[in-house]
Amino acid sequence: QMFMKRTWALEASWGDRGFHKARISDAIFADDAPLGPGQTFGRS
Image 1 (cartoon, rainbow, N blue to C red):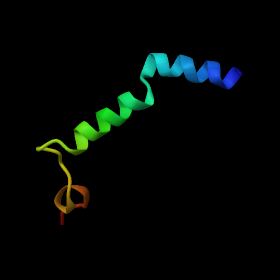
Image 2 (cartoon, rainbow, N blue to C red):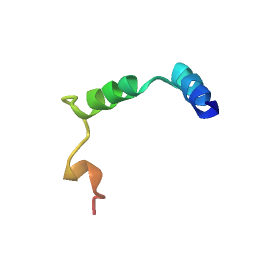
Image 3 (cartoon, rainbow, N blue to C red):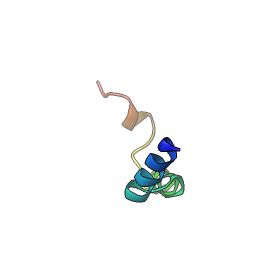
């Protein structure tokens, strides 16, 4: 029960699972998202 209280407190202050999933999907699927080999690997 102690861990659930901590989970609920953190969820209330930082956001729940759905909030973070939506945030990540918005960032990944944005038209100007910096994704791909030119962005993820170092340039030489």
